[in-house]
Image (cartoon, rainbow, N blue to C red; front, side):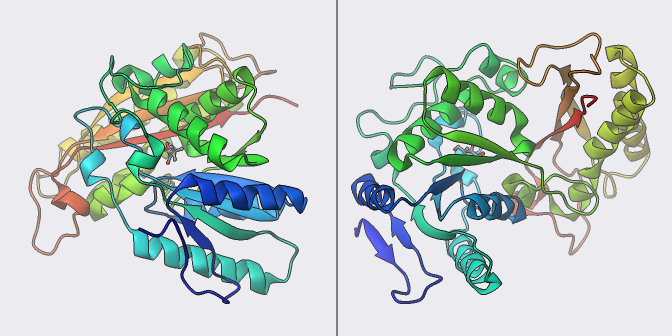
Length: 349
Ligand code: PAF
């Protein structure tokens, strides 16, 4: 297998695709000598507008943008959806080429996508098979206690896998800046902490969440939702809006702020339960949290000077009954879909 290819040599919108690290490192060294900067956007593919907004942000601040596409096995628990995670390689590459054309034709002094790193598992985990077991062997980065909270409570290996693969990717690409979406808020907190604690020479940028018109936060996993459950996506957003309104209206206690969010979720759930199985979507709330945005410690009272983050995870149940020609998404509406989202209760200036 070639370790680096350029799909359309000579086409300025084209970029190199690397399957292994040595040639990518050489490109990086050359860019360093030429005094060019690199912004890095790690992804697991199935690219959507949210990823593109990260790449746009990277192109605004750097001469070169590197993107990785790697579905990282170690961040999936043993019973999670690693083997069925959406893979849309051809359309991902086409989207990136189109975006590069946009950068070129805009005429503004933005950077360009110059490298896509799409390694094999063997490249990323050269010695031992990547383990998703809690006590599995391997060289791992753990960032505790942050990784044990919120998502980490129901997905115990998730952030070990994320921190480990990001560290590896940062080591290969040595970027000036790395770009993450606010949608995965806990991930951003953990990556920032890892970069600080392990003295990684990069700056972490967090880009605001891209949403559908109804408020559903964009995510590759939304492909599993289908039309009916996609409508539910706005539920978390509406719950956050209610909490935000309470906060802006002067409420600072956990009870008041979370009650506002919870009552939206309860109302939507009751409305759906009253519908027939072929019309409704049902969900379980995994958690709603009101926490300090740096430590993720749960708060009883929000300090207006510091603000806070409210975050939630909903587990969308499979559709009980479908109707003819219903668009049910990947997995035909039969799989649970976990939706996570968050909202900042802003600090006073
Ligand atoms: O956010 C993601 O897509 C992944 O967790 C990441 C950062 C690419 C690591 O695999």
